[in-house]
Length: 185
Image (tube, rainbow, N blue to C red; front, side):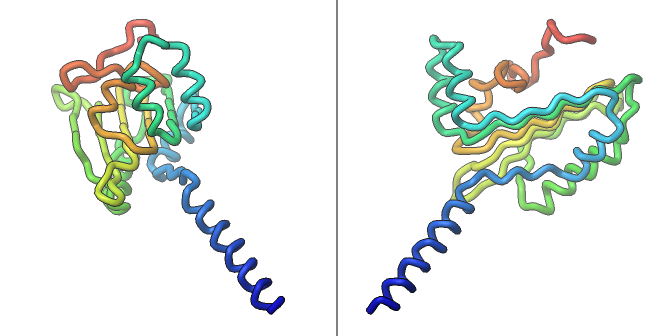
């Protein structure tokens, strides 16, 4: 009888560990983004977990939509890379990001290229699990800057509008990212 209890305890412990590992957010960074990081002259990278997002949302107490969206998020990761010269980054790295997302089963919702054939890019991808959006990724490439933002948790594309202007996510109006007037050119 003691052997059965011991086996049962071990099985419960293993199951609990596997369940905990499955629930932990898994941070996947496309190799193309990592390649852009290597050639950038300056880098800003941060990840906010759920508790940090809740704390940060308290700074904007009047925004009920923001607090509602944050309640379903597990984390927000932002990677911003700056380059000393316009279009100095490798456009092939941007293309590889798109290929990696497609290979990983993500769905591309938006793809916008710069006007006049310039290599600027705005891409939006979602990952769907159990018929719900579990992750959203945004890639914004401008002449001297590339930003990669990933939002994990229960979120809808509409929720991105409420997150816009917070946590490094660009403000979006009319489906178009609004430039931040306070940022350097």
